[in-house]
Length: 151
Image 1 (cartoon, helix red, strand yellow):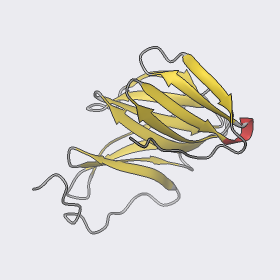
Image 2: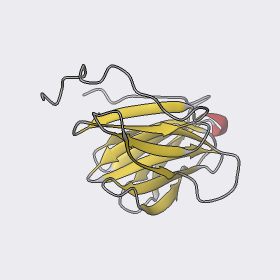
Image 3: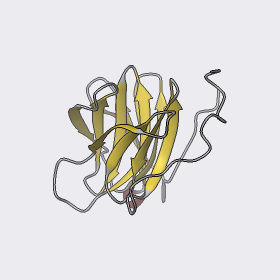
Image 4: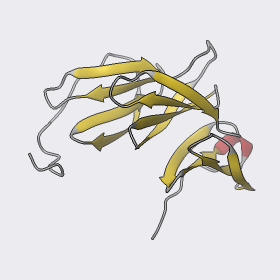
């Protein structure tokens, strides 16, 4: 299979009520984070769920938002818990969490060794070092919802 051929899977079924929010394809596997159930899933080409995990570690009201995959780690943002949860890509073993340094992270993107998170309810954009989870830079941005890198 050509790794860029997206026609191999026409549709797939997920448990009712989980609210898939954001997904991406990496090495022929579809990864997605759910808004309502705060879970991350890996789906194989045969329409089977390969693995899944909760993305929050507390019982707070939270909603999954977006994900990034880099260097064997899946990063999932959580609105409510205000964290980015890190998982091993092969096992979905929870590794740790970082704060988003804001409220209601709507989107995040990866640039080199940094995560840029767009925190809508705190009106800020924050650049986070992926290695240690520390805030590198923060700036005000009203109703920050998304962004992209243009090279």
